[in-house]
Length: 276
Image 1 (cartoon, helix red, strand yellow):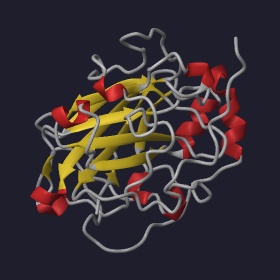
Image 2 (cartoon, one colour):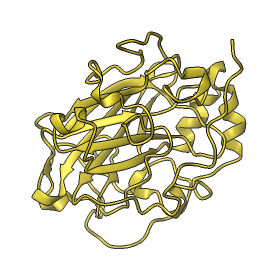
Image 3 (cartoon, one colour):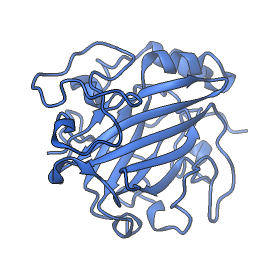
């Protein structure tokens, strides 16, 4: 089974190896925290299921495969690359993810490759949504350093109809596996804290649709996070004016299929923005 847990800055892991189910409250921070550099067994993460990649992965499993394109290995994913051009506008964020190898006493996941993707501030996914079909922005791969850490520069994703604000990711054993676009060891999603989402959506006009969309969904009603989200809820620091950092520590164990109660795609595509 896969494992993953939220990380809040450099705080110590709280009851990481204790049992117990998820607490279903719409909190604004993860229920367990960990340092990013520790690699001893005491910092092993609590278990959580893998999640669906959804209908817009861009990994070759459902249409286009951005992973085999030259230029996908990059830290700043705000702009399109290769045959596409264009930049996603929105509140800037740094996405810091730290890999732990559960099969090796929670040692740093050095050398693991992480592919992330998410919607833009209008709720559109590049390569799929009509408004972003000629873009491949907000997609990229990084390789974990000696501390198991990868970092991406991006924008804060929108809230589109029917889903809680989130970020998708896949973890591969190596860069070679990632750019071949096959054999992901972990596919999952990151939930974003309500307080941070509210701050962003009320700050920038481009997120205006997210305000109404978020009023109609909760973590409890979300078809991915509704069965428990403590282990998938990231920490967010900073503010929309000065930039924000999204952080999560991810434990990678044995390869497993998604155990999401709604293992298929979300109910329908994100709303399309009017053609301009």
